Image 1 (cartoon, rainbow, N blue to C red):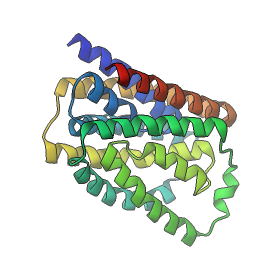
Image 2 (image 1 turned 180 degrees about the vertical axis):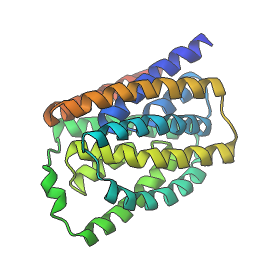
Image 3 (image 1 turned 135 degrees about the horizontal axis):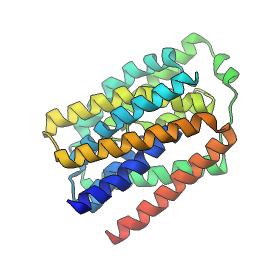
Image 4 (image 1 turned 45 degrees about the vertical axis):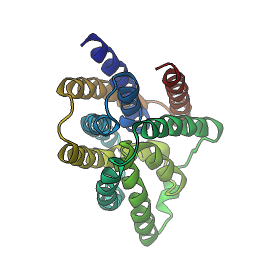
Amino acid sequence: MILKTVICLIAGLFAGVGTGLSGLSAASVISPMLISFLGVSAYEAVGIALASDVLASAVSAYTYAKNKNIDIKNGLVMLGSVLVFTLIGSYVSKLVPNQIMGNFSIYMMLLVGIKFIVKPVLTPKEVADEKTVRTKIIQSLLCGGLIGFICGFIGAGGGMMLLLILTSVLRYELKTAIGTSVFIMTFTALTGGVSHFIIGGMPDLVILFLCILFTLLGARLSAQFANRASEVVLIRTLGAILSILGLVMIGMSFFS
């Protein structure tokens, strides 16, 4: 019980900080840690992680919305495509070995962190407004399909890929990208989590409760900080956190 609490505390707080500060899916941290250190099956870990994502993403989205750093209209367009492919990805993930899923999340986190440090994306809000409505809709639908599959497949809520696509493809300003990301993730995580529980059954309720609680706490505090920080400080902090988390978890996986 003590080991469960400690692992869930570490995983939940770091996951929540990643969600509120950068739009990173809580599942990117929670899934590999539960798989590696508590022996939870990959499918069960993904379900717990997605469930933890729901409230953490919702409270983060609310904070970003209060600060007018969210694009709900285009986010809803992307959301429809995301939800369909989340269900498909959720089913496919049941066929994938545990270690493959855990390692994918860890290395993806490290690569995204390095990307934001080496080549940060600093885009003014006006750039996204220059695109036509038709272009935005087409890009959102196509990108949403990819993100949704990732959400269901690796339980990442689409967080890492979503942030990259919103900043690099749709050219969102960073805070708006994060706000829109966590808004979409609220619903993708809910859909993915419910489908996982329906297909695979209910997970360990103690681990589920602890992960949800600590993730929510971390997300609330970090989202408030992110909306007060400058974009330069935010993107450098984002890159550093993702890189450190990735390196630490890669190192821990070798000794687990």
